[in-house]
Length: 302
Image (cartoon, rainbow, N blue to C red; front, side, top):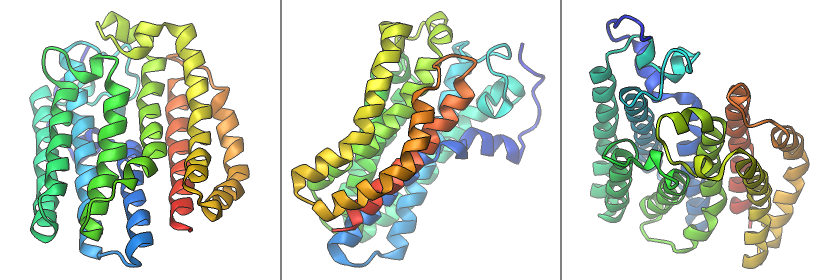
């Protein structure tokens, strides 16, 4: 049962934006800064601000529009959404208002994007438009991407690869193909956020008609794949640095690993269940911050 609709509050706007998930937009932006500074030795402050604003606003749009889509499709209910910050419409915000706020976030992201185009050329805008299209198709249409076994792949590519690629182009004035390789650990981390959510929500998503990868695999195979993906995620930076022959960066990452391992091992043992979902989501967000920051530092050090 949905709560009685109430007037829009600032708290609702913040909850729709979901700042606790912003690691997925902030970390790719940080990676773009690390790569750009390593290339040029300086960062244009105005363009760096534009990059962060555009990335965060686009992610806020994803969060808001997905809340709206989950509500109208019946996925989010008072019975399966205990926290008001996690299902804003269920707790009294008018669905149309939530939808309009989502599109307002998306429109606002165009403002720093247009500024970047004036300063840097068309490439960042093209990447941004592709990202905007992904935002819309992620939640809307007859077969939204979030309802298909493509959500993890699309979110990882659009945010984990698209943001660094566009960001480095903005900050350095050129497209750097190496970013495609350097962005893979961040992209995998972002994909793991969605995989964590879907792995915990298999029962709810199945009832809602979703065909996520976790729903198709089933709980046992999803659990095995999830643990394997965690190991691949923490190992991938070392593999990339070895391939590139960047041994100082590899040493930097190796020195940070002992700090990361306790949090990683705790999360590795967490059960993927509806009851454990809050801890799983908090853990995967924390790991994204830790591993993402370690990767950015390793990339910066040559």
